[in-house]
Image (cartoon, rainbow, N blue to C red; front, side, top):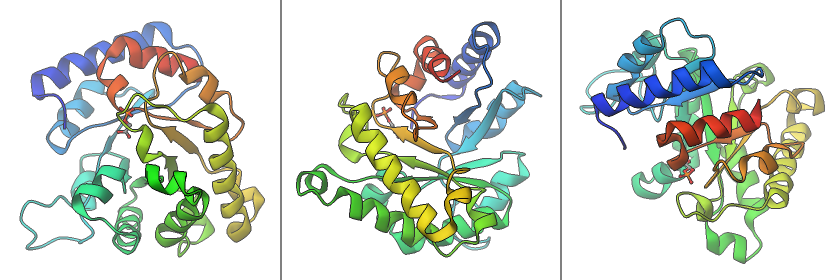
Length: 243
Ligand code: PGA
């Protein structure tokens, strides 16, 4: 919940020009904005194939009397192709459960939105060494009812809760280990060939200084960037670390 319309305009414009000038490799950038900014940011980006737009949430309901909610169909109707689902802040502050997220994933897919599905453990769970089983459970609850074809529309973001907005990043080894666990878990259900096609992003205090090492891990396919994405220069450096 950052940036007003004018601020979003400035940030998007800066990111667009820095990406156009400096990012050479084939890296995909998705700006996931608050609902009111989706359409203006999309319009500003125009036909840019380099930068796409995504929402940060959607309702689990199709449509109707749910005042204040925003449906997957509404988001899709703007020409926005992505939606983040199950961010740890949604789980923590809005009580979103695995069962609810399974519904949101379904409704997103039904409307041809690609879910960026977030999972990750809080600090106490890592300290009691139950992080792998919790993350596997989160993935199962929200995704394992999907067909392989549907799963291939999903991007997974592993975000250890203790690393989000705290300045504490998981080490590259911690990220790689969990990403490998997630991919192996997907392979167990859908087969290795399908699991290998799924993008698994790391999120949690990614910055210009640590991005290269994180992105170099074999199972880390990109980043979900929060605070550092609010500064065009730093965000561009992170994008370049992936390119
Ligand atoms: P951060 O946020 O990069 O500021 O830690 C990540 C997120 O909000 O998912």
